[in-house]
Image (cartoon, rainbow, N blue to C red):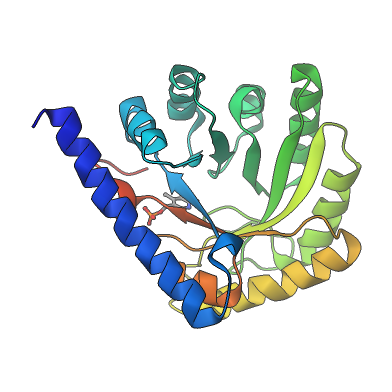
Length: 242
Ligand SMILES: *Cc1c(COP(=O)(O)O)cnc(C)c1O
């Protein structure tokens, strides 16, 4: 077997295992499998893996650093992929991100809303935006892994909703490592769902809930997540921090 065929077989096997986990979690929660979209987080892995994943049927991929994502997206521009940006985002990277990303999961401050809106309008594109909620942040602060404190969701959502070039798609969270939700993924995701219900009352189309990674996708699906972001379980343990 060539290296590429070996890698393909490995990815296919991992994907099948993740698919089984998602299906089982949906069944356990009485949810339709179609209600959960798998986003494969390809950070630190090469564009060749993105191509193999596409061959294997993956249509949603995510990255967390513009430096890595921009060249990868360019190398895969011929593929019908939806690119999700899930990392903490500096305003000086926004113009680049807006050139390839379809959905930004990490909107957590007004300055970023303004910058994303300007960049989307300039690029002539519409960018989907999720408000990243930090369940470990005090009011007025941002979380250690990014995100706005729950008190800040409404203001940001209204700003995205009113911003040219942006579309408010919903909420995202990363299970906190600190604070009262540390180690309590299910409770954290349940809390996110409460914020999502409140958000949808004012913005009915903002029905995406992005939660759950390799270690906790079952908790996220049980809580009601519509999108899970899976890296390690599909691609393997990352060669470096990312
Ligand atoms: C890396 C990353 C993931 C995927 O994490 P795994 O544990 O590798 O599945 C999901 N969401 C965000 C924001 C990430 O940075």
